[in-house]
Amino acid sequence: MSAPTMPTTRRTRLLAAAVLASTFVAGGLAGAGLAHLHQACSAGEGGFEGHRLPPPLAALDLNEDQLRQVQEIRDRYHPRVQQAMQTSWPVLKPLFDEMAGEIKAFLTEDQRTLFDRLRKEMEAQRFGSDGRVP
Image (tube, rainbow, N blue to C red):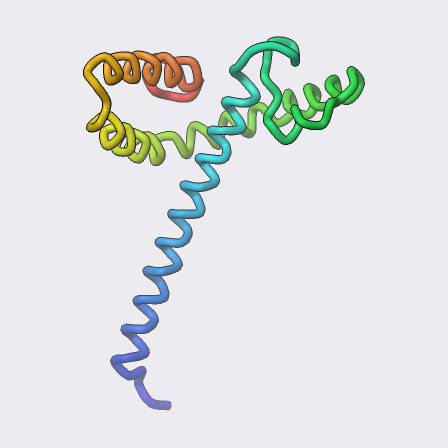
């Protein structure tokens, strides 16, 4: 058997880098989805025992029994969602900070001040005052 040629080694390295990058992106997207789910499950107003339903459920006009079942499911999954949030938030926060920096660049001073305050309140509500998921 012959030794691997240089193009195969390079191709293997490129493939490995692509898989690694894809895994990172998929993890980031999953974390963002979990952040959205976590927010929908734990924040908001009205309707569902003080919690806003995620849009796909809110559009269904669920009856009281269905709402109770949804709450039971959400309660059961809550510890796993919290764990996933603790894992993904340290990776996602720098991305959100970078994105916020770009957005703030075109806001007025008053808008920046309000944006910073609201963002800080939102993060404290979702992730605790120290930036960690409660």
